[in-house]
Length: 217
Image (cartoon, rainbow, N blue to C red; front, side, top):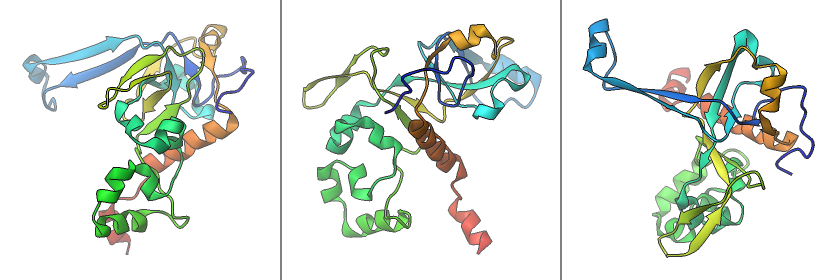
């Protein structure tokens, strides 16, 4: 079960799906080292996603009226090129054997040394995460279906959506823990799905770069 059947209307939680929150993204040409650089050009994209997801940890939601969000967006059509993912896109959320992260034809075409590297990079359980910045939300009646463009011309529609950990922003809201904010809550992850989200985002942010490993040794 990916979503709880009964939503807890007394609290907002990590991974909850909300509606009614704007998303703001600044774009600049280069770092701004002095005020006059602002004249060189920048823009701020403001939009209202149909749905947003809470990225703040449960115990931090609403402190100082701040919440961290990320928009729920359409999945990449390339995911459907992999039969293992096509059966259930939420498999992208969990660790898997390295060969399952590739379409069979792609894996079979890899040189033996590259295949071996993927196995070496896997954990002690022989499994690894893929699409590290992506977490898939299972389709449900609340989500609109949309077409997926396939190279083979196959007519595919889906109502699976995803979040991108790189696309996170903070938002101030005076009523973030009031009845008004709770009424904006649309879906609540199951305990298992929330744990999978926590595990993957922790792995995304907690990876140790190779240069740090060398220094630690």
